[in-house]
Image (cartoon, rainbow, N blue to C red; front, side, top):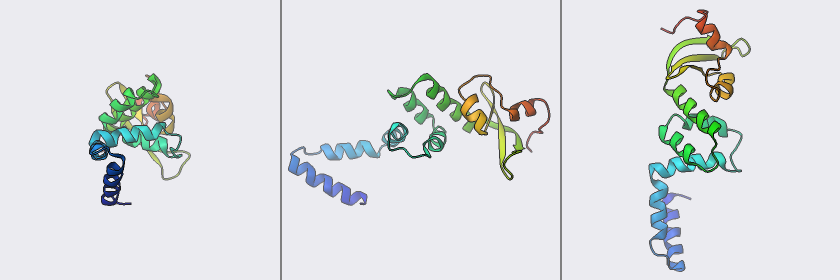
Length: 152
């Protein structure tokens, strides 16, 4: 169903229910940037969220407004808020090194400078380090030990 059809349906429904422009007001809110961001946050907390919800969460965390909405959501806790902010910082961080995975051929991870230390794009740092300040995955340890060179 395209947007025009949806609007026409909403207009007819509004007339039948006698609610006037309520549907149009809802659509205006729905179309705003804040509305789109709120829907992304709500998706994460929805029981209908698919197995890709964490990948989407990380991608969406690149936007500060998303991180701010996560902080306001009633289903959010301190750990999730910390994770969202860490993923945001990681997405904005400067890449200082790159290492190839020892277990997954062709897969590499980036070491990034963050406002508070370093972060890594590996799953270990993503799920442990992003919520535990000071945590260092093996890639960060290797970088700090001088075993990785800075990217050109």
